[in-house]
Image (cartoon, rainbow, N blue to C red; front, side, top):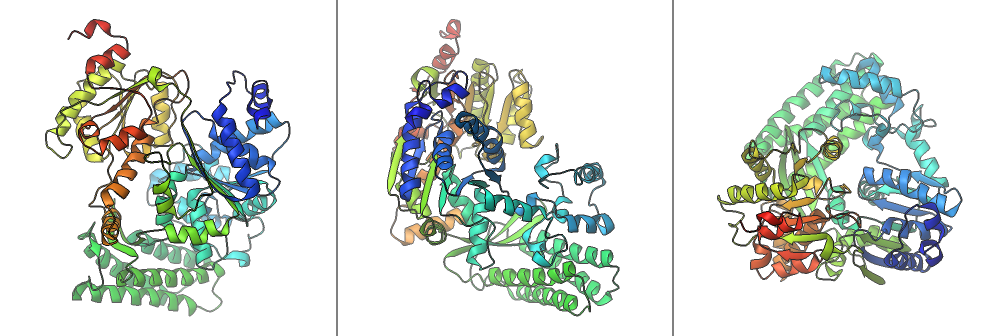
Length: 637
């Protein structure tokens, strides 16, 4: 490792301007020990450590399949297109690498033909996008929708032509051989390094738990990058969700397959109409209880009767499909989908498992009825960590209070080695942390007005060039309204354009200011003076009104644990570290970190936050911010 990362080593020869970072070699050696000898390594590597190459080198040298899982598809692409090619160039040899994404990212050629034959658009605005897909489909080498430029994530028709598991008919499909998912798996079976994301990893674990096979090829060596995200993503995949959209998709797919097969099945179409009618009544009633936690016997008599009728209609659709003689395989698969939807709906309606929290959620026009596990640590331990010979969990934000105890408790991992590496950046010189004293309580009606005044002053000092990150859309929109006309800098607001487009606009727009919420707190990288200030409105405590958060708090209290100290504070600490980590991304970056929440310095638990944050100089006077940005003439004011 030292000969690779050291001065004059292989990496220095491959990367102009390379600067040795001793912590990078230290991390790489620890990863190598774990990958060779087995066990579980927990490693926090502060921003700038170079952790990606530090774990990729021992993975490439191991001589057996290693699965590398990271937080997002964008980070997967960065690994495959930037980091791994750099490693290969430094080593002077090719590396056998496969990229695996969730099935929904890949085109299903059979469903694509069916959609061309009998599909319907819900908006004519999607027609130009579909023409782009038609042009791309015969030329693609992977079937990955990521190859299509400017295709919005919200494109409705894509789900109808993608290779999702619930639509797949497996080896009976006439396109099984040339299927893009089949080809993806074949590449992964031959690769030494398989790059996945946590969503696919957890989906694979859930599939294995249900005895439905596997998505990712067998592995016993795993590297989890951005491991702080694991618990939340596992929680999604180990739960059950039944939505109005899921029922409508089933109904629409049945109609389309009948049309594509030119079948006259009036009884089935009648059952589909009845299913839609019953689903509309049930989900409309459920929407009135959005956010409500559910317990056994939660339904009144009227809703209970409607729910039983909806279950009967799902059974009716399934039976009517199976009654069609010589039905095509895609239509037959829809009978299985109807059964799966019926089973999931029945499970959630019962709401009788104490290990889960049951609730109703409304997102846009879609109503979701959910069953979510309160604690996933036992299932992660059983399905993942006990089945894996060697595992590395790493991130820039894993530790709280200088310890990994919180991570171990929430994920069930039993560490055999731990490593805590600070960032190599000189925060004392490169940044200041500004926390104003005497701010109103964040729950006060006075908070937004005072926060807006503080933000305006900070933007004046930094000349824009800032991220302003919020813990809620309500605060973001309220501040955006108040800032309008008060600052001369270009204001970008989350929701005005896709995330990638907003980031690109921010990078290209001089003195721009971006107002955003949770999705911009992590996985966002803007290097240089274009981003010189990160402002966070308040400490990011998860809302206790969130059903999952509330259930976890209640569960911990019932066990005699301190939910605030042992759960709510650690979650907020890690989130704050992620948000403030957007600022200093290189040794030449300089800027101001600002948290507009006086609790950080006025409450006893604030010390836990400060101890976990980058060691920037703490200031409370706006004059210190002005001085940092080189405005000495204004200090007297």
